[in-house]
Image (cartoon, rainbow, N blue to C red; front, side, top):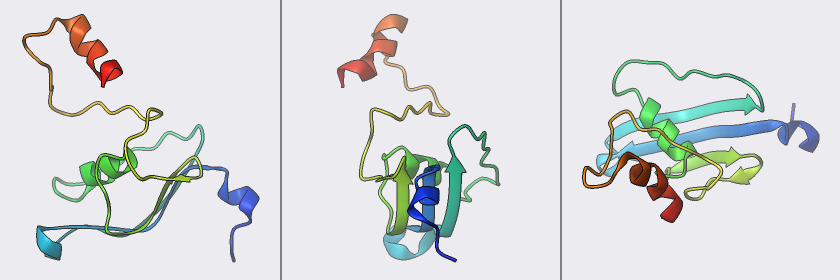
Length: 110
């Protein structure tokens, strides 16, 4: 059954058939991933190291591209970074010559 346009727009995040490979296609990071997340849902992405969690999150943030499939945020295709999405990386990427305040304000200047 096909989703009606009304139902399709309820998803804050929509992923269908998402694929991502590395190393010239020999490493499949994501293979036919499908996921719909409605506004207000709390979702955790869990799995072993190297299973594609970070790749998926980077694609959703618009920081990585994907090979095929659909990735949409609030009904718009994800084609690059968005001011509507914030990312907190696992490793601290602070610039040691800046103050804490300057490090926090840095993304606002970029």
